[in-house]
Image (cartoon, rainbow, N blue to C red):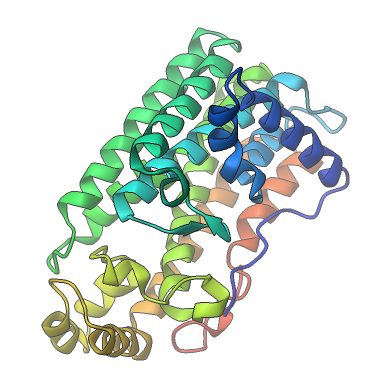
Length: 335
């Protein structure tokens, strides 16, 4: 099971992504060559740019012939810079050595410079948001705060086998879903859409982000090492017990899994714990929950007028489930 391509199939997407890439690279240029190199390191490593793409599509949902303006691209790029900056910091916390197939910033330049370059990216994101007005600037600042809170919640529950599903949901809402929600809301705001439509886009982004993270967590325990680009079960080994693990702990295989978890894992114990999760019902239950979030995201779009952009957003949500039909018990389909 490999990670799906979640980008919607819409005309003009390559040109839109080219606009986003140019704006991103311009945003990380500084007068200091070393800072520019560090700040642009993960940007140049590539990515699907889901957050700016969703922001751009959200801005075009007001009518069938609405074009994506520069403000929507700027708002989406601000969200992407927050995401990349958070990766700089996350890799320091996780002591990661690679990211997107290249050396992590901390592995190449050290923890101090990784933290400072991550701070720079957050500052540059805030600068871009400020150029779009007070409401957007305030929204992005609040979102950065939610990211930090989500990260702290996850750290607090490291290696805790009694972590609740409710706490898991609260953590991923802050760490992942909040930024998707903000990207979509910014798209609606800069396009001056009616407030009910802006709120619907905000809800869509939240439910999209929740589905995205649950799918990512399913892939962490189901996909192969080669497909993931890291060892399967990496979250579990780091003490981050995600939804498939929590559902397995609550099920028939919970006793054995609980005996293995609660602290660092040896390679043999990690392999055994992974086998227990794969053999249980936790993966299938998690796929069902991901599907429910996708269904809610698509339903949120019903408040919008029928447009190609709204259809593309719905397609982007449904694509998150592609490839999960073989997850768990093999009975799961796609929405």
